[in-house]
Image 1 (cartoon, helix red, strand yellow):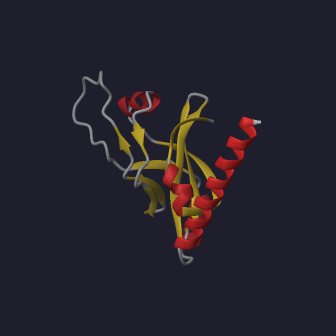
Image 2: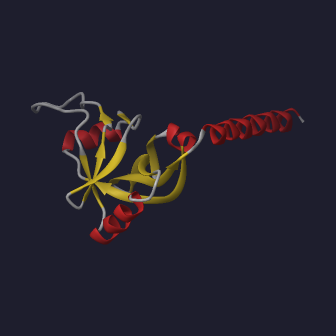
Image 3: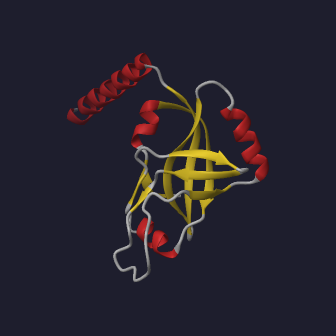
Length: 147
């Protein structure tokens, strides 16, 4: 999958337990805008309503050459997942501290897919540990480059 947009805060704020790919139901101008890279996953989440999965608060910029009518950049977009998978995810959501978080949007062949994860929120000390590991990795890579 060729990644178009990535949710960088997701891996920092959440511990990803499981990752799932799903197709999206989009309009024509939305597809062209996403292919151009005009999409943001900041602050987005996934919810289950009436046995369907919806991607909420994803900002898709209006396509520049669209001649058509109105465009809602924060429209809820339905994800294409089997009912069996939705049932399994709804059971996981009943656990304490579990959420469905979009990780990335990308191209898989000619289709636009959303990769999302079943995630548990990190505590403050876990975030500090992540920062510490990232800094040590940067320091080690700098040392390796110098030698």
